[in-house]
Structures are given as structure tokens and as C-alpha cells.
Length: 238
Image (cartoon, rainbow, N blue to C red; front, side, top):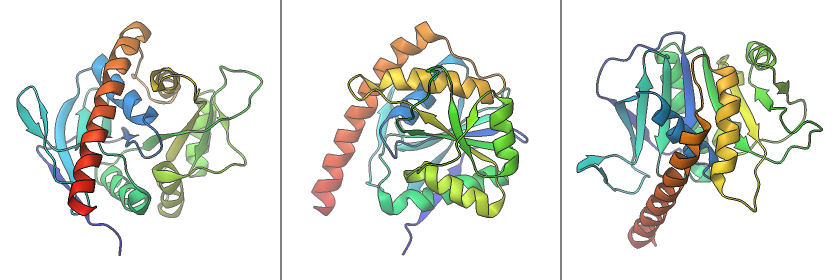
């Protein structure tokens, strides 16, 4: 039985023709850190929450205000929506989370869903970005952004589910492959991911100096929240 998930929207949303960024930490923290850091560079507004009977019951207090652990932010000027979470999504939830995001993207008429996968990819040019696309149109968008389309490989987790479900539904999905340095902190991979996203998402830019400071803070915060929610989950269900 697939996990039950739902979205609670707080206000009307208009990002028609825009983009959705997957910021779920399903495989490592790179995508979560990059998406959180991107939102520090431009004004994003909290527009909704994601909840599930299978998520631990927890409230994240930010500046005195209670929040769900999984939230949706939007910048209507850039026409960009971001799903971001302090929860690491476990294997049984990957397909359900992917379907939830694709339904939301279809509802709000997003033209492209962008995710990432921290996978080691050998290229002669370290600055060359490789990405996978769910449809011919998505693969063309990847080429137009100056990236190489992945021809053979394996992409696990929520990003892999997004590609498969996007292929079936005809939704354009691009998954950027991030070369992760396992010996270093996640913020380095997040900086590389931010730069890659700026190539495929019009209007999204990266202030590297600001991002390096913010990503270190965000990485620490996400890791702390992950420990807290994991401990809660173990006490409840262990």
C-alpha cells in the first residue's frame, strides 16, 4: 500500500509556464541544501505544506512560528516553485512523493520539473554538466542549456521516480547529475548544482559568496533537523 500524502495550500498560486524544483533530500542533502540556498538569493513566499500519515509528527519552529517539516515556496516573479523538506525521504515513499510533485506541477501548469542526483560522472571537462530528461522535449531543453544528455546510467530515489513517472505522463523532467566529492562537505556539490540550475532555469542566479555562507548554515540546520526527526521516528515506531 502506497503511503498517503497530501498538500495544503495557503493561498492562490500563479506560476503557469514556470518551473518546479525538487528539494527533497532523498539521496544525500545536496538537493535540499541547493534549493534552500537558492531561496536566499530571491524573495520566495511560503504557499503550502506537504504532510503524510507516514511522516513523523513534528513541528519545526522558525523565528517563533510553527512549521511543517515539508514546505512549498514560490517566487511568482520568476515563476519558480520549490518543494523543500527537513525529512529524508525513505525508499517506500519515493514513487508517491514523485507522483505528488508531478500532480502539483500539472495543476499549476509548470513547463519543467528540475531535480538532481548526486552521482559520480566521469567527464573530460569538469565544468561540463550532464542531465537526464523524461521526454524528448525535456532532453531538448537540456541541450539548449548547454548540458550533455545522459545516454546510459542509473538514477535512484525520488529523481529516478520523477523521470519514470514523467516519461509515462508526458511531463518534462530534467535531473541534473552532480559530481559529489565524498571527502568534502555537501555545500560544494550544492554550489555546483546551483550553477547548473541557473543554466536551465531562466532568472535563477547564484551569488557564490552568499551561497557559500548560506549553504554551510543550511547544511548544519538540515542535518540537525534530520537527527531530531530520526530520533522521534525511532521513539515512536522503534
